[in-house]
Image: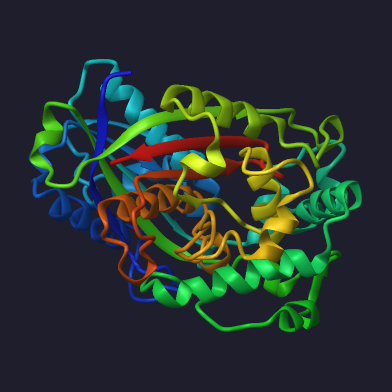
Length: 378
């Protein structure tokens, strides 16, 4: 694959409700930060990929309203209605096509202006499943229960993920939920849909994130380019009943492709830091297994040993992860941004010493129907 680098990164602070800023304003903030970080102007950007969704924005062709804010006026622009990792993948392909040298990818959402239960209910089959009242929480509870029952994963092990990531968020100035909690606090928090409790669940968030991708020639502008070593994506069956929810086969396939491109044979030993899409606490454990960091059912042992903490064998979500801020569709792009900052040595108090190879991961659809895995290197 031709060498492509991330040369600019920008994101807003992620908050429960940004009352004084509209969508265009948060997109502008993330875009200008990325341009400043890359030391370029909008005129140096060849094309733009925006990541948004008409349901969340409450309007059709949602990308058009932020065209001026992200500098896409007069440029080639397209919108991806999915996770930010998929938007970045599209931006990557545009450069690989040979038609463009640089691509700005920007994702935005104001979850505070939406109805999470109603919108996520609409992602299910309207004939048989939607009328059951399924949404992101109740469907994920089905997956969590299937995973726990299959492998003996405990609620306490999942709670340790929440404790770890909320603590990590205290080092992240952009995180929404940064706090010290205990396993007991998680276990006593309000039950939402068994076995998922309030502190097992990511928050509703407002925010935006942008990255700038460049080919090898154009990447020379950057003092700290982060190179894309491998990318993989895959989707599995739509209906939950057609899937084994405890076996993330799409993630395994996406990871296999990304690892092959990056030349990675042993991900646990060769990857220095991972940013994983943990919309719910159990997901970090299940996705770790799908990513090949351990055998199925063994991620609970890693969390028990502290192997995924900042100073452990494989730091996972040192930024606090999605549990600490969940701007839907933006969150996957944030995972790429945070992984890139780690490799640049610009992660501040979140910094993992000596990080040379990083993994970023995003999901889309109910219970991680599709996955996108990025391997980045210095």
